[in-house]
Image (cartoon, rainbow, N blue to C red; front, side, top):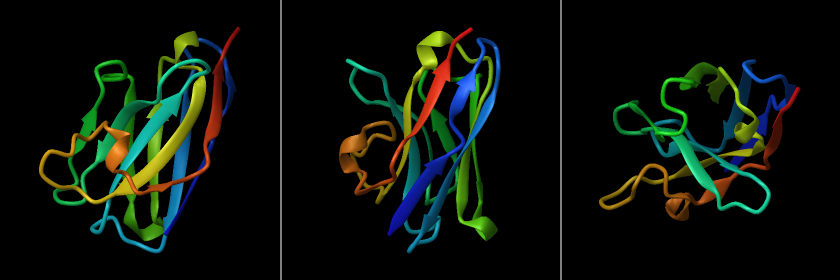
Length: 125
């Protein structure tokens, strides 16, 4: 199982980016895929996830309405569209995969078994 996040970069406040998470070794029906970020000196934060059971997406309150997760099964890729970016969105962004189960909250990274290397997003003027 492998995941690779890409698409980060430097963007001005109010701008947009699309992050990609290319995965292999499993299908979107095997594992949920989530996006997380970690800023310097801060704890890892769960942002969004797409369910392997019903394909539904969930979002953290901090990004609801600004970020959108989507998937392309043919390309084995999950995307995270980042809109109306703010300086506080600056962080390393990661994608991860894991098996859903009772009590496993979407944005809790502890139950995700597989992680890709991150991609840096910097929001600055």
